[in-house]
Length: 127
Image 1 (cartoon, rainbow, N blue to C red):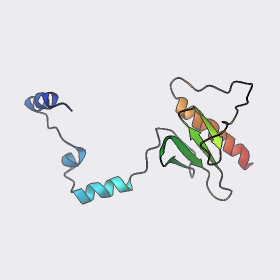
Image 2: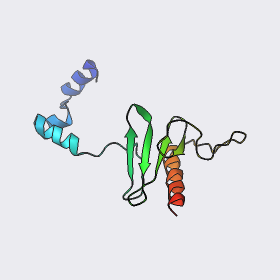
Image 3: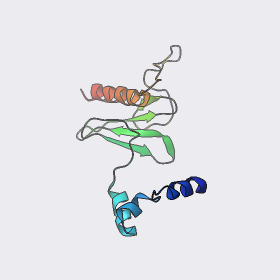
Image 4: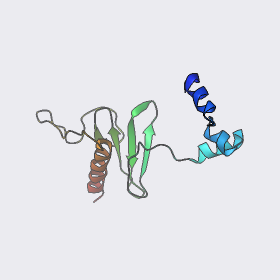
């Protein structure tokens, strides 16, 4: 926040600070809260028991994994707006053929649509 805006808010009687200051948390308590929180999931929903984890060094990718037994996974590529079967960051996306356009994801909720299609694909593989 810019200093000018902070000063303006404080002059109007507002208190400006962090959530830790508001809750009066010590550094250890703040660290414990941060460590206990689940990793961000980009606001997408997945079935219970499934996991969604970001790939290290690849901020545009997440890995969806089914529960055991029969663990299967799909890699969702948010940059290319598609997904691949397994742990893969290169190659063709599911539904992509060299001479046909693949399904386009766009508009509000496109991330959830990609994840939903990946979940449906994995559920078909599990059958």
